[in-house]
Amino acid sequence: MTEDKNTASGDPAIPGDPTDQYWLPPKPKRDRSLLFAGGAVAVALLIGAVFTFFGSSGLFRDDDGSEVSIATTEATQDYWPIFVRKAKDKGVTIKTVSFADGNQVNPALAQRQVDLNLFQHLQFLADYNTSTNSDLTPVGSTYIVPLAVYSKKVTSIEAIPVGGQVAIPNDATNQARALLVLQSAKLVELRGGGTIKSTPADVLPSSRVRVVPVAAQQTVTSLPSVDAAVINNNFAQDAGLDPKTAIYQDDPNSRAAEPYINIIVSRSADKGKPEFQKVVEAFHAPEVTAALISQSKDTAVIVTRPADELATILNRLEDELR
Image (tube, rainbow, N blue to C red; front, side, top):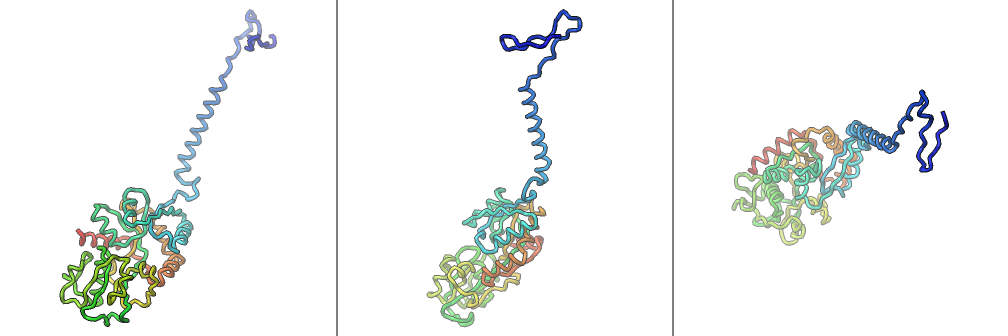
């Protein structure tokens, strides 16, 4: 057999003598480009299989597959970073989605843009569900803040004169609650005993005072011109009012206050997800609740009602609103 030679064209010469009885045709050369392409496909398929198997189980994810997005208007509050950290300790990574307008938060959840929301009380959720035919549901409770009455003219609720004026927020949710607070303080009497739908039109002539509906943010500025005002806690804090100077507030542990328990909310179909329960547990970590109470100047009351009890309250409220 002779050594292979290259032809002038650069192609390999056919080795050996074709007349030799032992001569065999040369073995065809493999196309290296095809080998390379086939190898690349095999690698891609292997990588895809690895991520399909391991990625879905979370083995290659920092959050162990338990990232939960939460829409909120409260992300700037002191307790929130602690809450996020405590959730992480439980294996849940919270992705915070902040909203400035609370009216956009429930639609974001209903449209599956987020997994949970944390910003509202049961009454607010009941109103949303009934007005939009939605079925968002609470997975856990957080806290409740009493609604208080302030005055720059008197130092006790009994000192408000007959025929006096009391400012209340004019938005539907806070207005009804304010009227119920004034009724519990024996300042007004409401038609039918009052409900979560009560309005100033339901204040009976036999009432001791007259109510003056104003925008919620104006309840503070109205204080010099009225005998008292029912002021939401956030506006009271913004105005620097000391909650200890309030002359009256509703009982956060009463049945009448149940509609105003703040909650963590999910879509009904997702309520049983175990990571959601971990989020609720993280919220109730002692460090989280301590920060919340401190920021609220000791006005917030932590609530630990089971999800099924919260759902029962929600259903009752929705029935009243229908």
